Image (cartoon, rainbow, N blue to C red; front, side):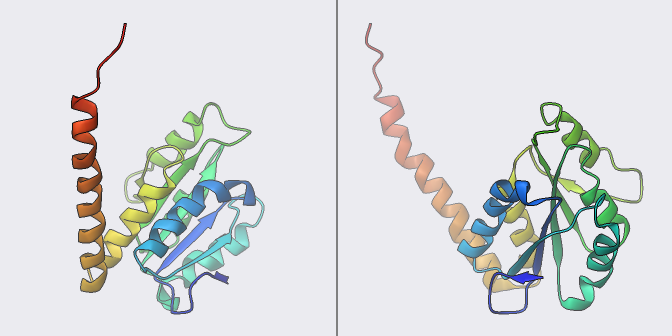
Amino acid sequence: MNMKLSHQPHVSIIMGSSSDLPVMEQAAAVLSELNVTYEMTVVSAHRTPERMVEHAKAAADRGIKVIVAGAGGAAHLPGMTASLTTLPVIGVPIHSSNSIDGWDSVLSILQMPSGVPVATVALDGGKNAGILAAQIVATSQPEVAERLNTFKANLKEKVMASIDAVENHRISK
């Protein structure tokens, strides 16, 4: 596994292929910003199924608290991973080159059978997946919860700073 931070990772970011990296880097970026340790690698449900099984079954024993799994097209990686572990799995549907406008990926991840839940973020929603993963980690790590509170306060400040600009905008004809 490719360790992205020097400490024991709490989040495992996996993707079906390296072409998913631009979306999954968004999750990594927000986890880095929130100082949540993670690892990131490629695990294909279709091309490396044994690697997927091994990764999912060993994750909890390695200290992982949540798995963020991104995939495009048929997007089986999040659901298959969820079927192999009791850890929470966050699915990131990715609009890939073999995708039907991304809908196949969204529905493949969203429509899981009863008993195998996958939390699903928006199409190409890597950033939200990272935030949700941090929120899960924060349930047992108060310092992460504090950083999330600051992160959310900064979001509010950005909106508040934009109010005057919008309210004072004049449309010229």
